[in-house]
Image (spheres, rainbow, N blue to C red):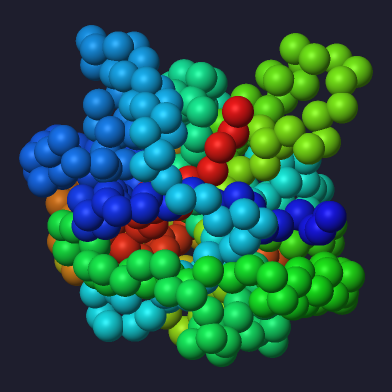
Length: 414
């Protein structure tokens, strides 16, 4: 059996469903836009759809949450009993997602070994979170997963494959593979196509991954910290939930061999950060109800003659600071470390802004200051996590809301 930390799975896909109604965007999107989810439900109606199998975060904490979760689990069981799904055993799915700007993002669906993943800060596991995991966000997700017979992933896993030895060779062979789906995603989500990767094609990928893992240490020679193989780019709290439920299972069955239990694994989409369509957008910082001049004076302790140049805006004034690279692998790491310390002892409220112009406009307010951060280089992602333990919260964004992963493939976990 393949013992890589990323493996083929027995993948479930609906047989005869209207795929545009079936596929629904990640539950942690549009959390303040209930109208979005109302439109999705109206579009899906009574047809087979993943909207009936997930709990949008916009609806967490509602009075009917417990009953809704029970209904989700009942619907999952009903879909299995009615034969809604076709099973593709011991396979991967190669995915191409056409984004808003017309670029095509490539990915490979498979399952990761949760024994190789640790979401805690400072982890040395082969799979790690890119940002700090908020423990309070896990229990609501556990309530959904605990009794669920199947899982549906929106997790995007990243590899740092400069030489493009993993996913790209699979893409080059797609014309000889069985196409599983090709359709437009609802609500302006672009287009998605998927091909079955099985038999010799799957084994070829497994061999490439084994070779990749054997030499991953060489990529980060001279860097403080323990190298890793994969980073969680999106959906970390969902993967952390899968890990937590698996740990509960182990605790309830001491001494039992769970090495082949389906709950040991979680379905994810693996992507290469060096894919041309993979864009990391910066997330800027604005602080309001503060004293900008006092803050800039205090920030000097975190500066150096050479380092990361960051522009600030406050009212009609602007300038730059040079942040000390000895404090972090990333400019945002130095700045966020300062802000966390400063705001514990001084007035001010921080917000995280994607758009440059929006940041500058907000910084024009009285008692406000904004910091325009540079985009993170792709090569800095893995290096930052390895060296610093995790990236600061809100370090970068992988595309826009409608470009997040949609629920499509599933897998039995009981």
